[in-house]
Length: 119
Image 1 (cartoon, rainbow, N blue to C red):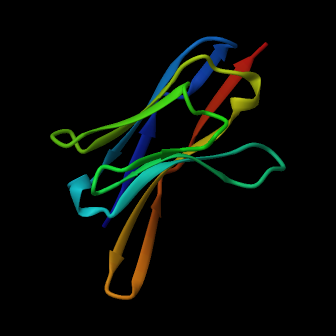
Image 2 (cartoon, rainbow, N blue to C red; image 1 turned 180 degrees about the vertical axis):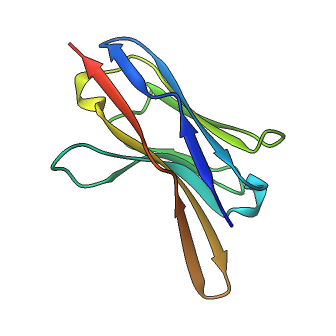
């Protein structure tokens, strides 16, 4: 029943900005955590940014000071504002939502959106 729909990816020059959006099918307040991951070709998927239902945020060291995660509880949407983009930010970016029910953890993923940063 959970659906995550991502948008906002594209091609941008180094130093530019993009804003990614992740629209959820239900209230994002029902998730214990949400965030963004990325995966470059031939690389492992890595954590980029996220927050818990309590509002605690975290960022990968590589994006601290450049990326900002935010949420709109009315629109049920999570955003990733990406500034000062570098070529190494090129990857497919995935929205993730996690819900803990009893002893079980459920992870939901968006379809991914391509971000390409040119030199």
